[in-house]
Amino acid sequence: MTRQEKGAAIEQLAVAFQGTRHAFLLGFQGLTVQSDTALRSELRRAGVRYQVVKNTLARRAAKGTVLERIDDQFAGPTAVALAPDDPVTAAKTLLKLFKEHRQLTFKAAVVDGSPVGEKDLEALANMPSREELLGRLMFLINSGAQRIAAATSGVARNVAIVVAQVRDQKSA
Image (cartoon, rainbow, N blue to C red; front, side):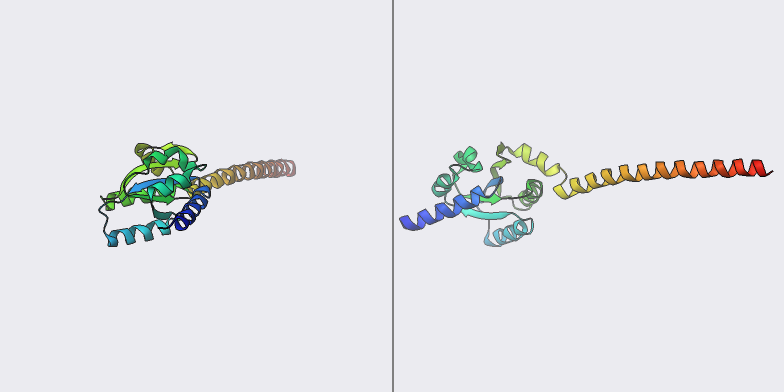
């Protein structure tokens, strides 16, 4: 790899690292090509960008990004999984892949700029996804409005019943 190619690779990695808030470093030694292909397609479906990196180039590209806090983990065969939006979905997918492919190992992660360990990754994977949380929030907002509507309609209905009863008593 020439010096110019290395510079271009560092620049490309730096752009990718700056464009994400959540990143996972993985070891993949011993993974077959077939397993790697399946792993890549599964991660792509989850919205995660997966890339095998050269450690020295990745360390240089990590300067000034969220990955700088874990750049000491760039050792041995390393792949980076970048999740620009939802770290929960990425963590769930990665845990599933760790169980399916024993050769795939967790090295380190950064979620919202904070380093995350393997136990934290499991806790993150057990959290509800962003979509689930938004659905719960919308349900709570909507249920409050439904309760107010039911309460106000109940008062009007009760007033109408009382007025009808008073009218019936007066006419009788």
